[in-house]
Image (cartoon, rainbow, N blue to C red; front, side, top):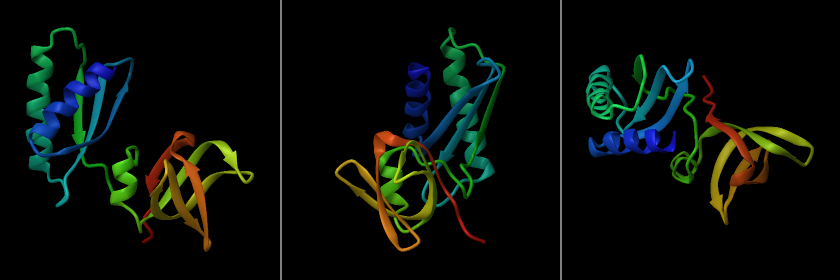
Length: 144
C-alpha cells in the first residue's frame, strides 16, 4: 500500500498538486484520490490527474484496480500531515483521538498550530494539547 501511495503521490506532485488522501476500498478494486491546490480544484484538474495516474498505473502491471476516482477534498477536508495543521491554523476542525485526553476523545475547535509534536486546538476558550501520534482522525469543520 505504501508503494502505491508513494507512486501516486509522486505523479500528483509532479503536476503541481497536493495529494490529500488516498482511499482503497472494495477489496482494492476502487482507488479514491483526493487532490488540492491553493486556488482550488476544478473538474479539469480532476481529469488531468485521473489521466496521469491512470497512465502511471497502466505501466505498473502489478497494480490491479477497476475504478479510479479523483476529486477535491471538500470543505471538510481530512487533515493528516503536520503541514495540514499549520496551513489551516485559525480554522475550525474536529479532532478524534486514539486515547482520551482529560476524559474526552472528540475535540471541535479552532486549530492554533503545532508545538513540539503536539497540536494546539482551542475549544470553548481553552487550548488543549494533543500529541500528533494520538490523533486518530482530523478534518476541517466549517460553520455555515
